[in-house]
Amino acid sequence: MARGARPKIDPALDLAPYLKTVEGLQGVFDPCAQLGRVAPVEIEIGSGKGLFLTRIARTCPDRLFVGVEIAKSYAALIAGRLAKAQATNALIFQGDGVRFADEHIAPNSVDAFHVYFPDPWWKKKHRKRRVLNERLLRAIERNLKPGGRLHFWTDVQEYFETTLELIAEVTRLEGPLEVAESSPEHDLDYRTHFERRSRLSGLPVYRSEFICRELSEPATPPPVE
Ligand SMILES: C[S@@+](CC[C@H](N)C(=O)[O-])C[C@H]1O[C@@H](n2cnc3c(N)ncnc32)[C@H](O)[C@@H]1O
Image (cartoon, rainbow, N blue to C red; front, side, top):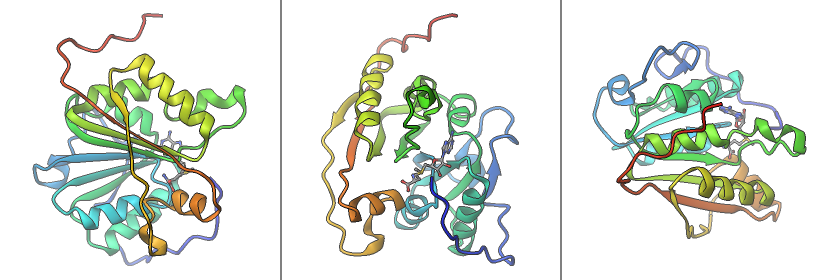
C-alpha cells in the first residue's frame, strides 16, 4: 500500500484499550469478553487507514468490530481514531490477519468477515503472499456462524477471479451474491480509502459477498502433507 502523509496521533490519547497485537495473544480471543458485552461480531482483515472500521463502529453501535492490520503505523493510526471517537465497540490488532483468524478466533463465532482491496502482489511468484489464501478462507468458513457473511472487494480483476475460484474449491460458502454499487454523495461515503481512490480514478471495483449456510457435515479438513 502506498504510504502517504499521515495525520499525527494526539499523544494525549490512551491507545491501550484500542490497540492490541496478534503476537501478544495466547489462545482464543473473545471480542465479546474484551469489549464487555454480547453482540454480533465482525472482523476486518487489512484495515489500512481504518476508514471502514472507524465509520462502521460509529454507525452500528449495536455490533462489535475487530480490525487486523499488519502495518504498525496504520494500526496505531486506527487506534488513535477509535480513541478520539471514544468507541466502545471496536479495536484494532496489529499483526497478521491470517494467523489471527486461523489461530485465535473460535469456530462458529463471527457474523461477518470483511476483506477490502487486499494487497495484489502482482508478480506470479509473489502471489503466495496474498492474504486471501487457502488458510484464511478455511478459517473464515470455520469461524462464520450460519448466516454469516464474507465481503471481498478488490480493483484487481485477476485477484477477484482467482479468489472466487479458490473460495469455490476450498469452502462451501455460497455466492457470490449480487452486491449493489452505492452512489456516494460525499468524499467519505466510500466504504474504504481504496474504494474511494479506485472509483475517483475511474477504475472498476469488483465486489463479492458470500454467505455461510448451516452445514450438515464438517468442512473437509486440509490435506495432510
Ligand atoms: C491495499 S491496502 C487496503 C486497505 C483498506 N482495506 C482499503 O480498502 O482502503 C491493504 C492493507 O492490508 C494490510 N495487510 C497486508 N497483509 C496483511 C496481513 N497479513 N494481515 C493484516 N493486514 C495486512 C496492508 O498493510 C494494507 O494496509
